Image 1: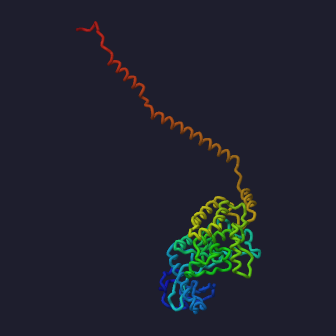
Image 2: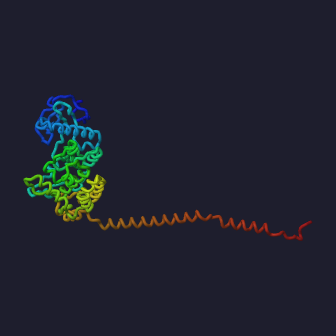
Image 3: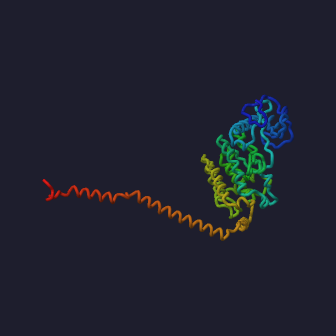
Length: 412
């Protein structure tokens, strides 16, 4: 089944044909262990798409061919299911599949633009330049845009597990799909596209953002791994440096152990004390290594209210105008707060007097209304005619009880 470009494809495959019939290759985007991605031009619509196929070296390796084909099928099935839900737009749309042919391949949406790492590169000192980033409000809105997509992925029983700045496509303000706030999208499915019982090999840059359980074990991660990665990237954009990064060495395996040792020490220092206490508590609870590892080993789901807590944190931040003006990372937030307060227009004496006069009138009117209601209540309890009516009844009883007297002037 051939799907038109731009429309999500179903899990069914297209007829066995070479993808070169429709797509013109432009350049290679990258390679993974089992597949490679090519940027192509659709000969029919002229739009750019990504064609993913099994690497030739893997395809002709009989021992690896089965795993590579399973990885391509799992990616196609997952993208097809995600494309049927609103939150699935966080991931690339599946355009066309041909996974049952002699040379299997899939065509997916090309996410144009820069990545989060391109937008916030690390300098020679391993830090993001001061005041070159987003405001805290923009940062939280950007990460909140991932919530729906990750929530849908987790409901499918899958998890990405390999989220890092280089795999996050950025759509900033002004992009037709971004809206008012920056938006983040995931370029890949991570662990969700890996064959069963096989380990997904992370990029070297992804290691400081991986869940500590994933650094130690080769089993598929759970939702808490994505929560960990999002919190680690959030820490970096706020503090200006990776939370658990270190100096690169020539031994990648040893770097994994070094990163995990840094994680076990808890939340690293470097966050400005002027940040909202709710944000500090959020990062501390999410990046708590012992609780995360213990819950994962017990089969729990510590993700819990991660997305709910993120939404509440955003509400708290939006109440303070400082976080909509201060560019992060910012080492002098207190100075900026003083400047914002100094820019506020002073309240005039006449305005204060007018406010006090209005307040006095309102109190007087309220007091009069309460007294009037009290009088109405008293009238409802006692009848205004009860006194004279009681006197008439007493006179009538007295007349009936009195005996008649003889009148000497009455005629017989």
